[in-house]
Image (cartoon, rainbow over all chains, first blue to last red; front, side):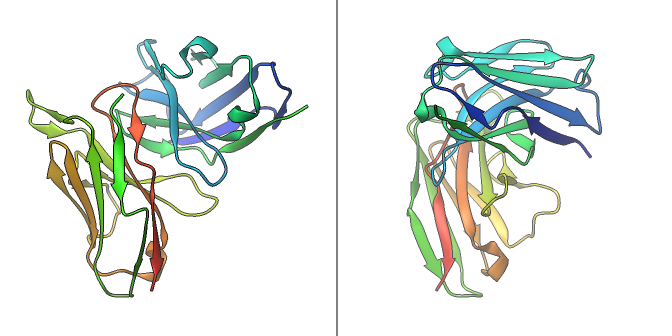
Amino acid sequence: QVQLQESGPGLVKPAQTLSLTCTVSGGSISSGSYYWSWIRQPAGKGLEWIGRIHTSGSTNYNPSLKSRVTISIDTSKNQFSLNLTSVTAADTAVYYCARGVGYPLYWGQGTLVTVSS
Amino acid sequence: DIVMTQSPDSLAVSLGERATINCKSSQTVLYSSNNKNYLAWYQQKPGQPPKLLIYWASTRESGVPDRFSGSGSGTDFTLTISSLQAEDVAVYYCQQYYDTPITFGQGTRLEIK
């Protein structure tokens, strides 16, 4: 069974870069044909898709965030990462990583990131 | 972007009764070449990540109780819980994966009456 675990700073200052890592266990991140995604959820609100990277390395980003987002894969560490630049309070949310074939099936437990000085 | 609109925003149903949640997409999510609807349903309980219930609009994920069913095609979809159980209290989301950006409905909160 594939498991995903998000990690990274829980507090980021405004205008700085939010960096999160998702560690995958129970399978190789480079095998199969999957999308590795980042999705976020502000407290008490709905789900927002940030973007994804395919096993092939191709990426898709939400246009609302595209200028600030980079998703990358590190196959040697079986991890994929999210960088979100120039953060504001509006980026405060629980961030989830997930794996799927279009629809995310396996999700991490989520990590709360607060943007505050 | 494909906008997903769920109705109602909240719903209270008695135990053992049927619960119905609707989801409408702003454009079709039916891919004509394979006749598949790129529509999924998720259940989210407090403090937990979403759990996949249904994909391809009507295919139940392994391990999901058969009281959960999905139907619809094109732009109009329904999630039905045939006999509500206490553990079904949650927020339910529809999601389209027909095109990027992937988009979710705003969520429907399901409670016990």
